[in-house]
Image (tube, rainbow, N blue to C red; front, side):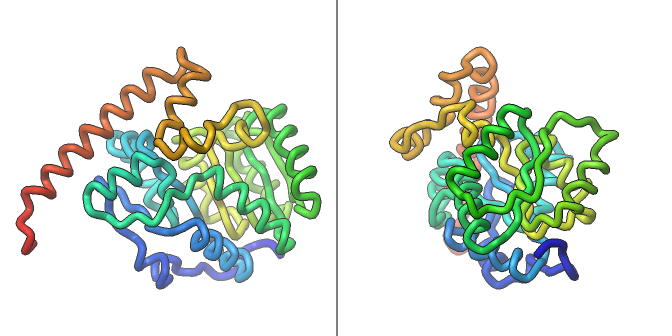
Amino acid sequence: MSGVGEEKDWGAHPLISARRIEFLQAPIHLLSMHETLQLALEAMTERKRLHHTVINAAKLVRMSENAELRTDVTAADIINIDGMSIVWGARLLGIDVPERVAGIDLMENLFELCAGHGFRAFLLGADRDVLGATIARLRREYPSLQIAGSADGYFGPGEENRIVEEINASMTDCLFVAMPTPRKERFLARYRDKLQASFIMGVGGSFDVYGGKVRRAPEWIQSLGMEWLFRVAQEPRRLWRRYYETNTRFVAMLWQEYWRVRRVPRSS
């Protein structure tokens, strides 16, 4: 396996096209975890490149202020809902969201899927220690997983072509990109047509969690939509202002849209 053949028009895929909606002027796909995994399996089996990303409140707010980021995100073939605030906000506006598909959960499920089907994975991003810890855990938990290659995220613009060549030479089926927003979105948009992995996914800081550098919130905190607060508690000086500003802005955007929808006549 490896490499992609002729491009597939994923926008015309019956499942993807049927589940695409707009939320606060951003496209999202109302897909379950199972459906997303089936699409990933389809892409890797058929060797047709499928670009995946997620949206949470912070990214949605940044997209409203950054036209380049908006273009990069909307270019993806699948845009899953990562944050509970998006789930609740969409439901408030009458959108039937099946469930949250958290990026880190999808990543772990994809590790299992790749191990079970003989697909090769390439890990890109994070620092060397985190990357090493992530690979060590993968080898313990999924000994049959073929790790095609890895590279940390500390490379400059002048090294990007070399990184892309390394990824392609590894003959990987599934590429995980653990870099922050908007860097990973810009990298994937810039090299989308050159990358030969079948399933491409930005995973942000998920290697930090999987590799043990950062603790993930317990499930009951996740269910309350307070995972962001748990994250802030671990690094308050660095994160409190970012989350305060983006959360406040998101609530304002949602409130404005809620009242706009309320004013639209039912016949419309």
